[in-house]
Image (cartoon, rainbow, N blue to C red):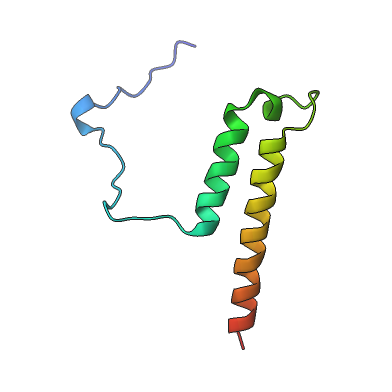
Length: 79
């Protein structure tokens, strides 16, 4: 409670994360992002007691299908 704390760093020393301008996400990452972004913003998806969200189910199914395709491609390429 009365313990000393480290001082906050100056605002000039805080920097935004560096992201390359030409960076694109993989299809799996894009599908996951769409699924989680929807789930976090949708009242139906956030509330377990509500009915199923059709859009959330569709996005989750798309993510799982894209992920499974990627895993199958990797499995086929490995000796």
